[in-house]
Image (cartoon, rainbow, N blue to C red; front, side):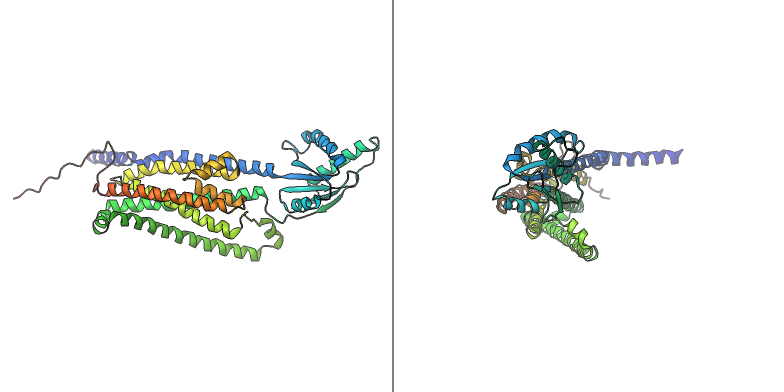
Length: 414
C-alpha cells in the first residue's frame, strides 16, 4: 500500500505538471488548429477552382450583322448546355479591319479555350484541345445562327465549320493565381517554422541564465539585433539548402520528362521568374523580421518557458488569420480583399508575393517594400524596448497571477 500511495503522489504530480501548462492547451487545441488549416485549404482550393472557371472564355469574331443573333442564341442554349457550370463566358468581337490584332492576342491567351472566326455558314474554329466542348459549343452557335438566317426546314447541317487546334504561348490567369497561392503558403510556412526557432532559443537562454550573461557583457540593443540577424542567417541557409535541392530536382525532371509534359507543366508568373523569386525572397525576409521581432520582444517579457509558450500562442493564431486573408487575396486579385491584404503590414509580404504572379507591374512592389520596411523599423523599435524591459527584470514575470519566489533561507551556521 505504501508503494501504491507513493506512486499515486508521483502520478498526481506529473499529471498536474503537464495539464497546468500552456503546452497542454496547445495540445488540446491541436484538432481545432488542424481543422482551421483544413478549412482554409479547402476554401482556397474552392476559390481557385471558381477563379479558374471565371477566367475561362470563348471568343466569336463575327460580322456585325450576326452579333445580335449570336448573343440571342447563346442566351437560349447556355442554360441547357455544359452541365451546372455551363459553357465558358462568350465574348463577341466584330469582324473588321482591326480584328487581326485581337485574334493574335486571344490565340496567345491560355484562358481563351476556343475562337470562332468568320461567317456562321463557314466559320473557322480554333480550339485548345481537339474535339473539346468549347469548340463544339461555338459550332452549335454557328449552326443555330445559320439556320435562323437560312432555311430552318433543312435536315442537313447548314454551317460547315473548319476546326484547327492551337497551343497557348503563355500561362493562364487561373494558373497564375494558383502560383500566387503557392507563394503565400511557402512564405507563411517558412516564416512560422523559422521565426518560431527564435522563441525556442530565447526560452533556452532564459532558462540557463545565458541571456543575463550576454546582457552584462554587451548592450541589450546589440543582443536583440544579434539574435534577430543570426536567426535571419539561419533562415537564409535553410531556404538556400532547400532551394538548391528543389532546383536540382527540377533540372533532373526537365531532362527526363518528355517535351509535351514539360510544355503542359510550364508556368510563368506575370513579372517573370527572376523578379518573382527575387521579390519573394525579400518578402520572406520582411515577414521574418516582422514576426521574429515580435517574438523576441514579447518573449523577453516572460519569466519562464511556460509563459513564453503562452505568449506565442496568440501570435501564431494571428499569423494564421493573416495567412487566410492572404490566400483570399491570392485567389481574387484586384478585389477589395486583396487591397486590404496588401496594405495590412502583417499580411502585406504574403499578398504582394501573390500579386507578382498575376500582375506584371513592378512599381507596386517597390512601394510595398518601402511600406513594409517602415513597419519593420517600427516593430524593431518597439521590440528593443520590450526586450530591454524583460531582460532587466532578471527573471521577473509579467504574468499577473504569477507567484513570487519565496525568500531564500540562509544556510545555518554551525
